[in-house]
Image 1 (spheres, helix red, strand yellow):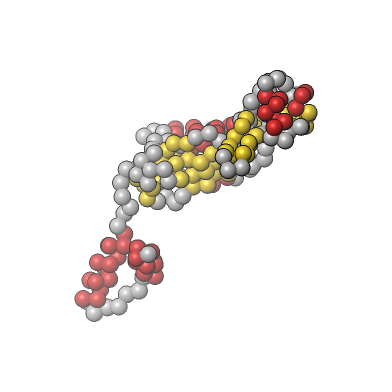
Image 2 (tube, rainbow, N blue to C red):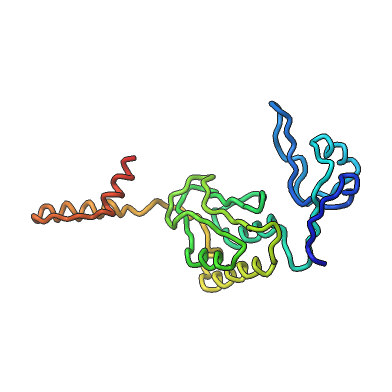
Length: 216
């Protein structure tokens, strides 16, 4: 069976799975998810659906060899995330990965580029050695279309497995390592002072920009 997205009257949706999350809004009181994607509609759900103005809803029948965007994004996040990284449920095809503790981002940029060349999926990360606080985002895993070929996620998972084979001590290409950023700016400052004492003049635009960022 091929994947099908169908619009049906709510009265005919009993026993079918929702294609999207459905949101309930009560002005001044509540705004949030009423039903999660994948929820199988029951007779008791029909009045609630009608109350939020859903006389018709979309249901999704996933065919063999395909994945829903949320399932794909979750598998991609699991392939990337290692020690010190946590994440919750996907939303609209995206999983945000966060630091579980304070530390430095460990990101294999070659792995990220390889994943992004697959197509229909995207992995975005902070730069390696970025200082992170608990709860800071380190990456986002996203499936771009609503339905994606499972082979593309399997390819990303295979890349992660190959990465683990090459790096036995590090189980995943993304981690949060305990520690502080390297103090490269201090070393450059000492070098410039030494040069000044020797009567030479030096210019280091990278160092200047680092000091400017530090003062902000």
